[in-house]
Length: 138
Image 1 (tube, rainbow, N blue to C red):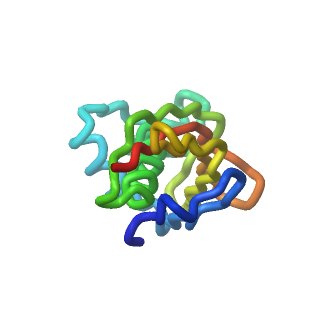
Image 2 (cartoon, one colour):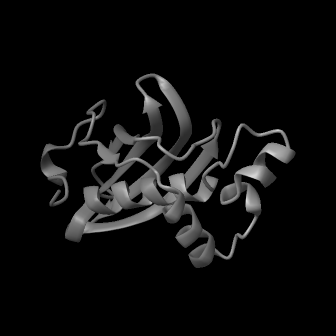
């Protein structure tokens, strides 16, 4: 993905999705180290079950990171991500393949920005993380 062409972006346009391969437990351990979030519900099945979860769950901020990656790839070297906000509404588990989606909600010609609606899905129509971003173009 080389970044989108600002001149061709249109309100309502679905942008190229980012598909993340199956979440692996080792990825969760590495993320715990990188983020400093060592809550065992993210790395230890026994602890997760003890607190009522079906097993280990991914850090919510990992999904946010994936959306940040998508936004960065969409804007490419043509600008920057000026805002990113998310809401977590579902759990991500090891083995899940996630699809990160973006849709243009608004194009501001004067400010050269695109307002995006974002989502992370395990399966079509089942949003686990939703959000919005603003991409600013040079």
